[in-house]
Image (cartoon, rainbow, N blue to C red; front, side):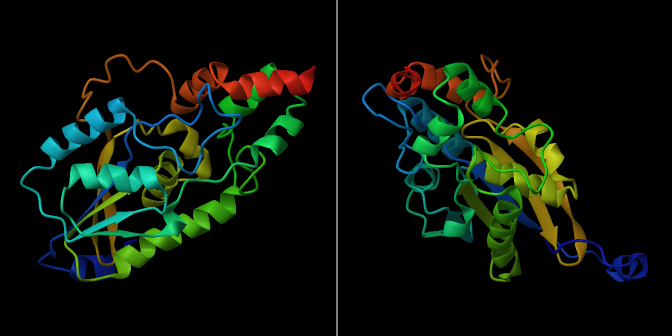
Length: 255
């Protein structure tokens, strides 16, 4: 993504420095992908839980007094619901290229795990490695290289728009991890080491050809000390799955 340095002489010539534009990157509030009354995960239409709504309210208070020139979401409802609560009344636009990474269809996931709950649990926990490279697939679905191309393309379109000085982008966990790795000029193998808790906020500052400046990562206004957060996002998904009808479906396939 642009915002990278070109050469040292040009960088030094940019004096006085232009003010950096502030790009706030937020993960949507908490949702539930698995439930006792569904036969599969609800990856696309999941909506905010009461906990997620509380996280949005904390973010609204955190951002009170701030003005955003652009508020951008993905095409999935949970990001729009989050943005509507965090910046009430703001004009929202969406970019489907910023949607979350796509796993395989649930039936294919069950087939690949051979209906074995232990295999399925390991598949979910290891969906992001480590290790992780461009040729890896997310739960037998989207290729990491394809995913990285579409999400970096989406954020680059926003960066190329000169009309804003402060923007808020509300998207998803893996989207944010990949974008942060790009801004840090790090390989994909960094992605599994970057947690993005529900409702978290990141800040990246952008200024022309100068390198992006990552000022804040995974700050959660509702839980600033991360009280009670003992599991990773993927581990929490596994716990949801264990209590859901999806587990019963996988067991039935095994039997």
